[in-house]
Image 1: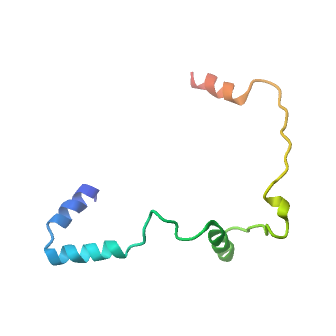
Image 2: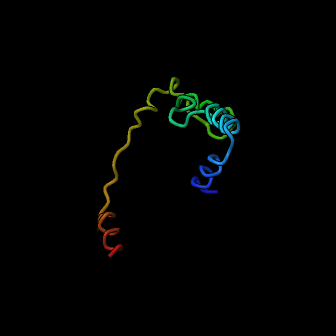
Image 3: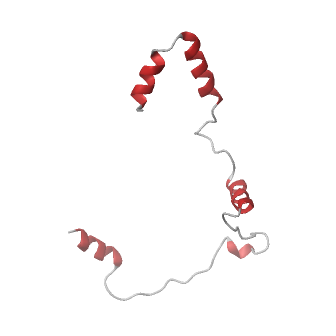
Length: 86
């Protein structure tokens, strides 16, 4: 059912039924604000066994991972992509 069809169906309802629909919509959680913080979400995933989250307090270096770029010879990947698109 499309949004237009839903709106048309709501318009066809009585005032009491529209009030019930409004009450239902008002009771739904807002989509604009996050339900939990990033840390809370990480803890939730870890508790469910979906992801393992490293302990940042135990290893402060995790926030600033050190890496060294790899030097590659040949045609840059971006140039290959541009040529492939042509």
